[in-house]
Amino acid sequence: MTADYLIVGQGIAGSVLAWTLHRRGKKVVLVNSSQLPSASLAAAGIFNPLTGKKLVRTWKADQLFPFLNTFYGEVEQELKIPLLHYSNIYRPFRSVEEQNNYLAQTSDSSISPYVAESVDNQQYQPYIHNPFGGLEVTRSGWVDVPVFLNAIRLFFQEQNRYVETNFEAKKVEIRENEILWEDGIYGKIIFCEGPHAYQNPLFDWLPYNPVKGQVLDVTMDNYPVTSIVNQGVFIMPVESNRYRIGATYTWHDIDWQTTEDGKAFLQQKVQGLLKVPYRIVGQRVGIRPATKDRRPLIGLHPAHPAVGIFNGLGTKGVSLAPFFADQFADFLEGRKELDPEVNIERSFSLYYSGKNVG
Ligand SMILES: Cc1cc2nc3c(=O)[nH]c(=O)nc-3n(C[C@H](O)[C@H](O)[C@H](O)COP(=O)(O)OP(=O)(O)OC[C@H]3O[C@@H](n4cnc5c(N)ncnc54)[C@H](O)[C@@H]3O)c2cc1C
Image (tube, rainbow, N blue to C red; front, side, top):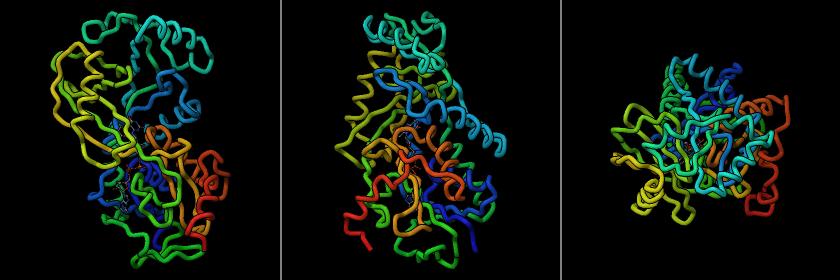
């Protein structure tokens, strides 16, 4: 056998899964096309346990967050690269009403572990509009996604287990217990194609709901705030005077083009938040591989047990991927069931009712 696993796609999903399987002693070959755009290269990389306007604990935060710390921490050590940047998220209140609501919520035992006990609102005042004060979310931060992807690529390249090509599913021979591709034999093929998956004839029946997103790269000369600031739009320090402002969410224009509308939206949002002038030095776009029920799409093909998918990470690839790659690896080794909320079995009826039966 050439390798235990052939993984197609090296965004956050493929990289995390490849590393997880490799750490378990499996032989993995990664295939990726750098000519295809990737959601991961647009991502800010933020992990945030309390999200949304209503300040709710994100799905499975108690399980995902310890796991992501361990996962990226181990990769940092093994590959000797800085990845994890811990940083509180400062959320200025929009109104007295919001202040009251949020502060009431923070006494809830599901929220309180993720909120700082006290906040120095004054330190933000020269830079951020915060007339009603704000709160700080803890256990949050960001992962340097481009550094992570680059390091994983180099690692597999050095082992001669990286193939740069646009993979065509129709060129694979699928057998009951193995996959034949080019001159190799693989135990399983796992597709991690992110938003390109709906073009894969093996998995085009799954309920995708792609969401376009744009971010601005900016510079500021006088903005020493080290926390991420978030009020519908985020301002994230990256390095010295470089920052990222994001993000947009649109469903009507699913393509990989940056737009003036997207830029204007972010500029307008940040205007109400930021007191310091900034210069836009770049704009990035990506398509988030989101799903109709907002849960990942993980599992094996209904008709081909040697074919799998690890996708649907939506807006939260950084925090979902480590936990679910580990769960998927257990499942692939026959040790554990997949969480029914992420298992693609929940959508098998779409496959059987569609044209792909047989
Ligand atoms: C503007 C924006 C901001 C975001 N911010 C955050 C954030 O702060 N935190 C967070 O957790 N998430 C964020 N996300 C979401 C995050 O980007 C996704 O959850 C994540 O990147 C999905 O990773 P993926 O590997 O599934 O897909 P992708 O990153 O798109 O990776 C798929 C890879 O597969 C390759 N590929 C696909 N098909 C083929 C093929 N047939 N042959 C060869 N190669 C192929 C592509 O080239 C690509 O490299 C953001 C997204 C956007 C757009």
